[in-house]
Image (cartoon, rainbow, N blue to C red; front, side, top):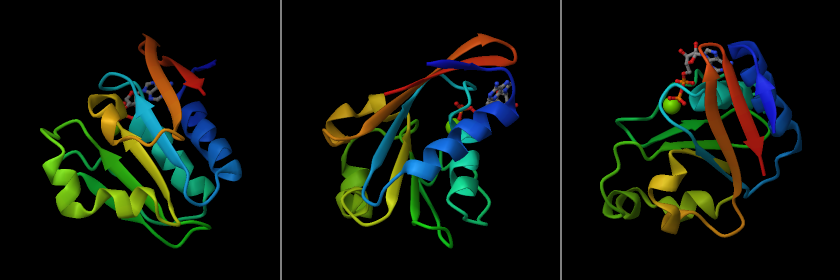
Amino acid sequence: MFTSASVAETEAAGARVAQEVRAGEVLALTGDLGTGKTQFVKGFARGLGSPAPVTSPTFTLLHEYLGGRLSIYHFDFYRLENLTALKTIGFDEYIFGDGVSIIEWADRFPSAIPAGARWIRFHMISPHERTIELQ
Ligand SMILES: Nc1ncnc2c1ncn2[C@@H]1O[C@H](COP(=O)(O)OP(=O)(O)O)[C@@H](O)[C@H]1O
Ligand SMILES: [Mg+2]
């Protein structure tokens, strides 16, 4: 666990995780609104070399970022009401596919998260400080 003192430090943490991530891995992010999950994904996509702009898939459930070392599937369960929507988009094909999946609010539907996922937990400490706990 470490403390990030800025957006840049949170992005750098994402970029570091990207250096070591392997095809098929699933990253399960937890933490309240505004704790830096999406900022972390920005650094993660940059670290994998994807030029795609990262935005929160709150309303669309999934954004794909291609063009880097691995394809990235960015999910956000914040507005997800049940598992049916995941079935509809073929969630399992993404998470068991050859890219990497990174899921915000993963703890809202833990049953959808595979056992081998790496959990990353975000907490707000002060307006500009966040702790990031990497499993
Ligand atoms: N150390 C920090 N790390 C990440 N974000 C920070 C930090 N300090 C302040 N912030 C602000 O917190 C917000 C984090 O937003 P976001 O990444 O969208 O959160 P989440 O996806 O967890 O809801 C941004 O407005 C960002 O500017
Ligand atoms: Mg977010």
